[in-house]
Image (cartoon, rainbow, N blue to C red; front, top):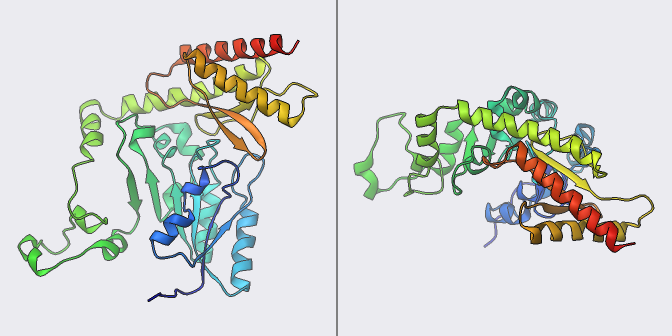
Length: 319
């Protein structure tokens, strides 16, 4: 027996800037698992810096309402996987409030930059979201396996997940007391938060803040230095990811893509540093992501040296 839901739509930025990037925000599989497989998923166009266009967002909502749909969820990114772009969160929050939509922010990568002064400026508006996700194994440099979901109204979370039964009557709690089992799909669960709680208790927040400030500076340093050795760079980094590519004048798109693939492959074989890559539209693009606690200025200089060596090898091979 199938259940039909009211005609609703969910709105987020496009997934076509790179496989696995914004699609993770709310992909069709997640909707289907949540019982919302019939909901319409709208993708909002981005600007040249890969940030959601708020004018297009407002237009998408108006178009859905005009066609009889009920927009209810807006999903924005506080640091995308591909480019590190941060959507205009404050403006999106205003639209969400005006339109009566739930405002969710994917801050898995970028959320912990809130610990820095610069990060708070860049992420302004995230505090107005209804929910957000953060990954301590990214921005807090902690062991993999911890994820956080923050919801402004805990009662809504409890209403969605809390459960009881006669066999649980001995676990009755005082009125107003909420168990972790009441705010997630898991009843029994390990103490995952220990790996985050313990370092913060022992070390405090200062070393984490200092490390994040360093990553912001490293990205800006790499962005400037990569241009000096001839690389074409993407938008100025919002956080700690830089996109760039080798694009000699006059080269075709196919040739440029092949050269950048060769640079990534060559650096991987070299083994001293690791660059990842993505597709931004039809352009093969290289990514530098500074988010390791052992990543420092000397790492950036080594990375630039490796890139210079790879481009020199390419130039020699095409003569």
